[in-house]
Length: 360
Image (cartoon, rainbow, N blue to C red; front, side):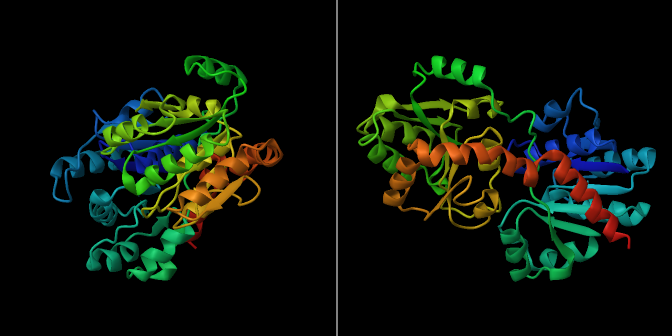
């Protein structure tokens, strides 16, 4: 099949990671894939040199003619079987271009924030396929007016070659952090703001550190609460056992430093890419039992679900995974679970299968 993706976001979040990974997965599966992207965006840099041919384009909003010109020109040259979009500002442009050129449109939504009432009712009806990234998100969209029969689920793909266990990398990272091999490293990766549950985790980690002297915490990412978290760590009982590295362009290698990963979000989450990437590296996870997050793990097998905002429960969960009897079997099961449910070949094949059903 031939696909033309359009995504001119200049951000570097989960939707952008989905765009990059899915386009590369389809290309790796033998499909022809091209993409209209902002030339200065992280997505353009991530796809540069890949099998995905890039076209420079910009959609500042639904009325931006620059984006229409670039997308129409690319579509007329490629003659794709599908136009695909990941971002709200390109929904209506792709629908209009699809109608103009007679090309079906598939759209993804990664947020739980409701669209306006008119778009909620019409977008999924006007596109030939509309994908939520979790069952929870699908239910949410339907509750906000989307027609149930028009919304499908396709999980976020994760590149299992990029995220894989690497003992040598683990040793190098522990050395970089000045930790010995016996250290137990709890990771929290992503945007640093209160809605991500970072202060619940900080309290829980400090309480666990009081009982487990080998425990350290690795914070990777930045956000509006970066400095507040740094100040809270400095005032905590164990500041030297918290390692706040800030934002890094490629977080994948750092999963190998971890013994366990926490995803303690208290704000709404449609999905959770970070727990899946951690499991791909044989790292068991602790996740909030809320929103779309429980769909990212196999509870009791590859990790634990915990009540969001409950620092005592998170302390107990951390200590449970500091015990080899609990942690090691979960670590051993984690990568197989990620492979079966979220690997790029699995998601690319399911995407193509669902698009095929649209024409029946």
